[in-house]
Image (tube, rainbow, N blue to C red; front, top):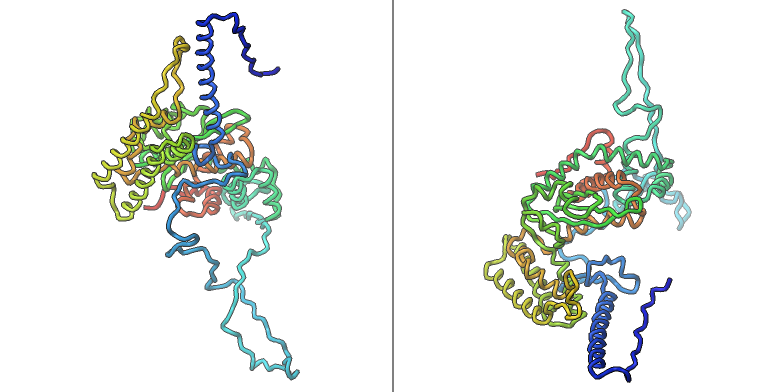
Length: 484
């Protein structure tokens, strides 16, 4: 069935009165203006990408190179002075030492070289490599004895050794690490284990390992959630994921040392209430300004990376000078705050705060004059609902209405300029969906959230993930709380 827009019929102008022609012309002008506005909107939509909107860089395609919002610094490319680097270093005590002998005969005179004339040079070279890797099998046996009194004694198998044949904690840790942290699909994980270690697991065994890890780590993740409730500043974000072909929502809460992920069928307040963090949170919540966050009585701070992208879009599509000036103002404030933090300050001086707030207010007022609120046309007077406003008007209204949240970072240096911490935490789960496809069940998504919360938290604390997983499979879950 065709959705082609019907053509406007041409009226018989000869039969029309002057009044009818005037009304027809007015109607055509209104229609042309509507179409011109629609063309502008469509052209602007085509111009959106990751540098001027919230679209991910993966949607830019191959022709556009992702562009960072950061300004080019004065430092040269490459490692900066004081950077330790990751150059391969020698070890003090090598595992093996090989002495390479000189030839037994002199290649000049042909005489044998006496061993007492041979010495080992101080110069040496090291090769760092992996040993041949193959799984090991440990067979457990127990003793049985009968006392002279007749009682039979039998030793016990070690805790956790309950089957005639089973996989150990190291293999289980490898399974969970590859699937839940390195994002490998289940089939590719079984292939990797077979190629690397000679271990051939079924996909069902892989899933059992994931479920076992999730169950073991639940109490630790509950500790993370409790700690986030008491955080002074926390970052919040949410993103869609698919479960069995249906849209669900992944919610993240982050600090510099903690990460928490939770899933829900809803995106808004119902989901946030069920997770239990925001209802009890009394610190500063950093987020992208999505409306449901405003239901919570904690202090709020808005992500200025979002504002920069929106301002870039408006500057590119309208060429209005206030947008470029506001971009420069935000970047100037970000740089000044960075220097202030380096000096140990907790906020900018009051006069500098006043400067940025007053300058911002003037630029917003200038933008308001150039982007007035759209009014309903007389021909649409009977229509209901809100009138669609321009992106510039909506952004200006938000910046004005939530000015305290926009500029909180200059008054409280605990609050960062952006919400990048939360966006980084939620990016890897999105990558897993891109690599592995949708989750097959709600239980699978919940298990992923539990394990990923624990591992992402340990990664922020520079703690070994594989070792922690191996401990978890032996019943010794390491605490995710950072050392004080």
